[in-house]
Amino acid sequence: MITLFMSALMLSSTVMGIAPAFAQTTPTQAIKNIVLVHGAFVDETSWDGVAAILTPKGYKVTPVKNPLTSLADDVAATNAVLDAQDGPTVLVGHSWGGVVIGEAGENPKVASLVYVSAFAPDKGETISALAASGPATPGVKAIRPDAKGYLTIDPTVFPSAVAGDLPKQIAEHLAGHQMPINHIAFDAPAEVAAWHDKPSWYVLSTRDLTLDPHAQAFFAERIKAKLTTVEGSHASLASHAVEVAAAIDAAAGGD
Image 1 (tube, one colour):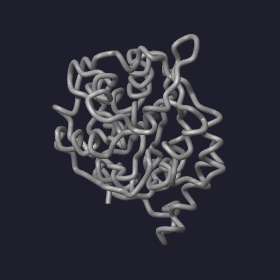
Image 2: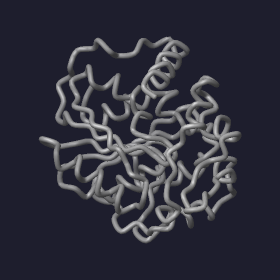
Image 3: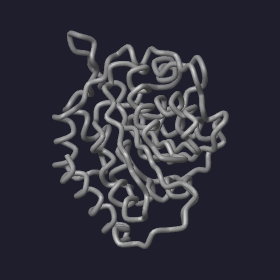
């Protein structure tokens, strides 16, 4: 998927009139490690555009490959990556990844948290209950289970509901190559809410048709996050990679 996401990065940068920051000089920064946690239905390559901006700035960027088999399994995978870092780390989560970083964020290596169009549950809350507390979005309505209880989004709905601001070819590719998530993950209550103790940033996507922007605003306000707003879809980590990278840079104490 790297070519697809890099293409999305270049497209978004061109539209904004901003050149990707591939050749910028390394800033003086307090934190040099960044760990990226992907959401449901996609894999770690969803972060390729953001990583391509941050790495030349001197950051060590490591994406987590979530198994998407349970909340505990995803947290364990994230903690394994965090434990391998050589100092303070910014932990970033997209969508479902927000639940994961809320748990793994208690790791002593984590200095700050960044949520990107992400759930930010408090202790005891589940994604299923949070999603049911408001009107269902087109993306949520299109979630389908297979015979084993693993969930994907209807591929005919995915491009518009999840990735409406990505090129059609990319959106359709993602729809046809989804990474299913075990339904039990959405029913697992959060046992930790690290945002109570760690400074947090939030990137809110105002055109998100999967995680309602009003819900995102609620999460951002509740966790007292430093807020960035983008006119993006649920796939804003790709379509607005420049702004997402800037929020992560700020969370690391960069320029």
